Amino acid sequence: MLNQCAYDIRKAAEKAAFTLCMQARAYDVLDYILAEEGAGISREDAEAFCRAYNECGESVERLYDEDALRNEAESRVASLKVAMNEARFEAASAASLHEFAKEVFEIWQTSGIFARKRALKELRERAGFRLESHRIGNYVAKTFDLMNEAQARFARAQQAVFAADVSYKIKPEIYSKIADLLRSPVR
Image 1 (cartoon, rainbow, N blue to C red):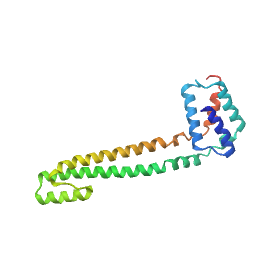
Image 2: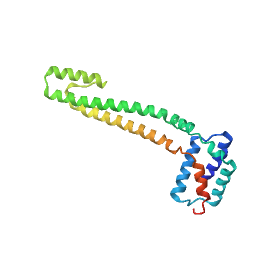
Image 3: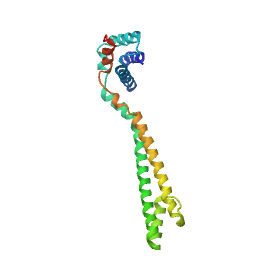
Image 4: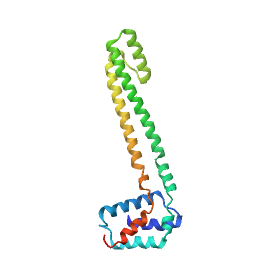
């Protein structure tokens, strides 16, 4: 990855900007160097990176455009956030339906015939599927399953957003920090 970062420096100098992928890769390399204290990095790779960094000079840090990188990061997760919000709404609706099914079950056990019929009619309208009056207890279980499925979809959508969000990797001077660490005699 260090060789790829050296390539990224040269490519960014040509295009006059770092992309989000380049920035994320450099962040990962810096994290690796700091965690492993440079173990596993060959002298040749370190020299190649430093050479690329020196060739591009101070322009490397001028190529860093935090606003552009943040916009790119936000655009990558925008559709995932929309899907996550839809899944959140579905999970809330399913939880509401389940709570109402529990209320109807309570009404079914304790109230008169007219209250039962009115509650069952409303539950049928809200559920969107056919409910049989003699199996009212099963609706609590069925809506519980629907609620769990909706919550699982929401959790998957939320994890997709978290996995795709690399905005925390947008930090200034990552390339110079890498170069400084690679130049230091203690590695």
